[in-house]
Length: 255
Ligand SMILES: NC(=O)c1ccc[n+]([C@@H]2O[C@H](COP(=O)([O-])OP(=O)(O)OC[C@H]3O[C@@H](n4cnc5c(N)ncnc54)[C@H](OP(=O)(O)O)[C@@H]3O)[C@@H](O)[C@H]2O)c1
Image (cartoon, rainbow, N blue to C red):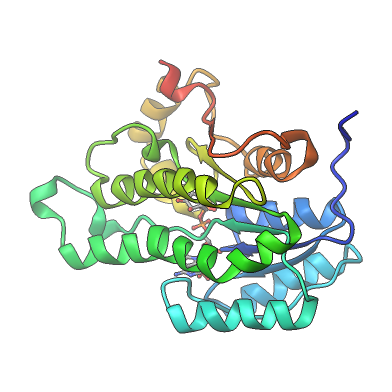
């Protein structure tokens, strides 16, 4: 029978953007269930703090600040991880941005902001998948991309973000095809989650209330509520799930 208790002891996970918000919750969830975790982002102090949170749970970690849009930095990250741990079982492509300059009607969007969004959210995820691919195939591991409801439906005035997240869902499916049966590749598509990324929304009372009204669950998610489905997808419980995009949105797109 399938093991219904996630236990990642002896496994090794890399979580991009693993220092804050959803990524930090994912980092702690994998450490809680026994995995060694390397949480990374651009900000060294935050990386050190997240690494300490892993070590406090008795798991191994490594401080490697990394910008996922920098190909050379991504190559160095995975080379260092492979060198230190000798294996990679789980990669979570969570690092993502939705900059102010990339919001608005299409004719007002600065194309450089479009590129920057795609470079982090999509190209960065591909770069990490590419560098981890051989190790994941060797370990029979799992790759999880953090997409968004904006990867499944259109959202007005968020064109670069929506394009990048639709791309990420497509990438999830094509990687799943190429790497089956060795590596399962899935996406999680959160709706609105209480993190720094949605600070601007929550500060705008009218907008915040409108979004709560549109959400059947009548609240934003806690980051832990996104981390739990990620753990599920990486676990034996999801052993026949690949190429899937699991929407975690409190019913938002069901309306
Ligand atoms: N919050 C939501 O409502 C929501 C909804 C749907 C999907 N998502 C997705 O969930 C993921 C996490 O979002 P969040 O809300 O937790 O965001 P957040 O609180 O802003 O955290 C983003 C994380 O990504 C890191 N990051 C940003 N740019 C990076 C880069 N170029 N290279 C490496 N790391 C980078 C940040 O650290 P540094 O800035 O120090 O690099 C931080 O650790 C994103 O992919 C986002 O699109 C969020």
